Length: 177
Image (cartoon, rainbow, N blue to C red; front, side, top):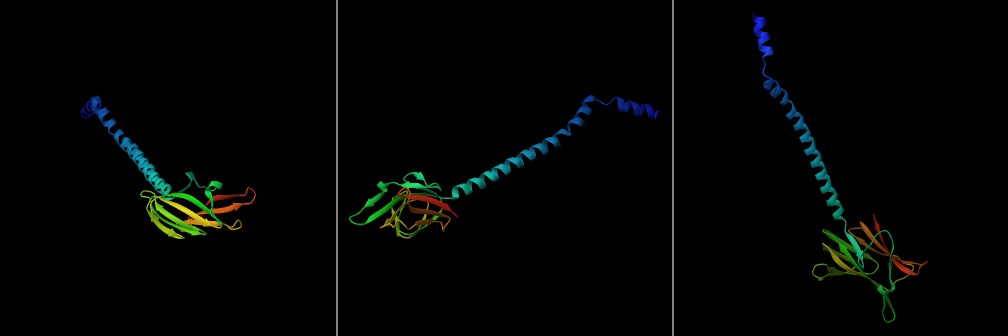
């Protein structure tokens, strides 16, 4: 008799009960997939923040609206002013930055102005500022055999002004260390 009871108990299991027992294993797989998708999204988010924070930290330097890069920019003769008997090169630069700036001239003097208020911040060969600034780099009596430099953020970026003998023009180049 025990066999008959056992057989009846096994064969008369409700199909709904079997299906509900089978479905309970699926949510665990879905949780694992959901957790993996969330972890991947978080990783992409963190990498994006790191990328954006590093890409905005470097100051961008403009000369007459053009970005200064490792490609030479010709300083057009209109940017070279002739005084009575001495020549002066005056280069209008704009440094776009969100952080602190230090600008040092190795040859010539710099005048630094706030980009927001046009207030003069400093004049000389070394200036500090916060945020974007306008800079006028002036070189009196430029020597064609000499190279002039401006260093931004403690030599992180160096602007080089030199006379190109082959084209008879002054050129501006950005060098990053």
